[in-house]
Length: 352
Image (cartoon, rainbow, N blue to C red; front, side, top):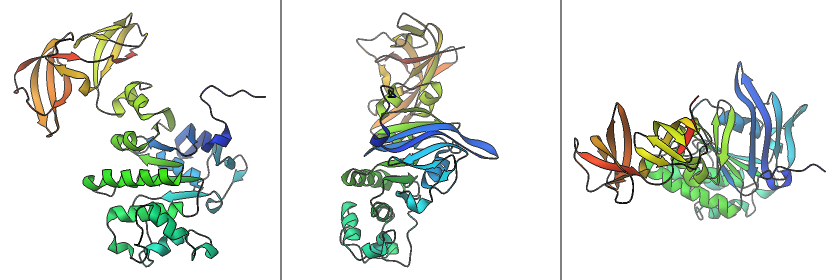
């Protein structure tokens, strides 16, 4: 009997299992990518444009054929050597970027479109409309809905056939910033209520961290880290992940015995690295005039006020600067000298 690695789930516990998938369109796009999506979870694929996120979704949906590797949906092999299951037989629901509703069909008929003919006149369309918070709107036409409501109709249409997996391809990118946070919270709540498994493609770090159970960071056609949002943010796998996920301050330093010397003074780290390192500090770790922390002098060279908080650019001397996130009031004046310390351990990565 084959033993599984400690963190590896049995295929029957997975809504999606991707192993060694590669795809090239002339140049390689995906290069031996692995990904697991646990049943009932939402995994965010996070990465810059062109890293292969949408290509992976198209391979999982069956719109493209992979060059190598295997894809299992709900425990069933849908793509592999000599096997390619057509999209309509994969039990995968899709929510595209802008909803893509049929303008000539009512909300009810849009939701019913993906159902078998015998189910279209049943109760399922109304059930999923209620699930996504649109009960009673079935007779409306798409143009009578707001952008956020249209996205929820697209989700209801994807959920109606009870798919094994829902794929969301940057579904909030067309919404304005004020609406985006509300709609994604509503969509997340609807997925949870349905017990659905989902993969969300996004390049928005805030979006991925706020809605996903697992954030899978994609770079150069591979998943370089897949973990819960806190771990990806606080314990990045490498310097590339650290600088891509959230705001970072990267400073030169020297590590030894759990301590780091840096332009921000003596810092602590949980790393066992020794020697020259890149020190990663999050802006919210910086504190002004701390009474219980070692501190160094810095000059405020720039500030940006956002109401609830502010960003301050600090000159640490020797051509080194850092950005601090601090409560919005009171703020030191530009040109003022302040004492600044670092709260908590920092992440370091060895420098070759």
